[in-house]
Length: 321
Image (cartoon, rainbow, N blue to C red):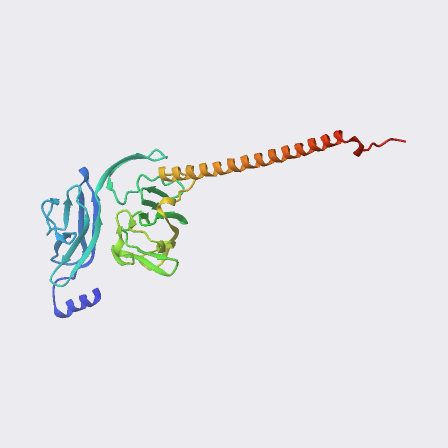
């Protein structure tokens, strides 16, 4: 399509180059504000327009910049579906991004690395130790998984949210294809732009840290996912797979080498307690049964001896000759 536009521009003698490959890049700034830049690799005399959740940005939402500039700063606590439209006399292109609020984190990983900075609360995975197995941690019904490890296993709560770290970032000029069960193309990113997103109604992708967020998880999200990474020449430079398992919230599994959530621990203790009670009842029943049998046998023997003593004529003796 872009080639056709360029040809039309050349034939008509229009001096402006068309808008191409619009990219939105967000970052958390100090005090929890959010900076967002909107840019196009190609295009002359560009004009910008911003909307948030379908409405034009207001001064109450903006800390700096305005709806007509390519760089804006949103005030702390502002979030939602942000859309940047770039246009000139030739064409217009829009791109969107779900912006979450920023939070301040301060943690230390097992290797001694201290992390202290503002991050996006919805996609933060910085405090997940990369040496921890498995690659999934759970907070409520929101699950975080590091999919940068080949063969990773990710767990999601049915109806919950899963945040997968697919790559360090997607700002390089590579092509990323995320495929389910080797046939269904779920997500494609190329030239700093989303070319295809099968889950666009309940997901969003953050290019700056390579995270893919899926909301309202359903059973059919289960499966094996493969990430193909192609260089600008189209050659596959890397391929990674991960297994995604969707489970009911109250039975969400975490690898036994990690610490379980309070709900999981409580549920396990309850099951173990009930099993112990059943075993004790069975043992008590067995003991009572054998005690009763023993007493019955002893009673029978006593009765037999008593009859022998009462009627000696009915007894006999063996005499050795």
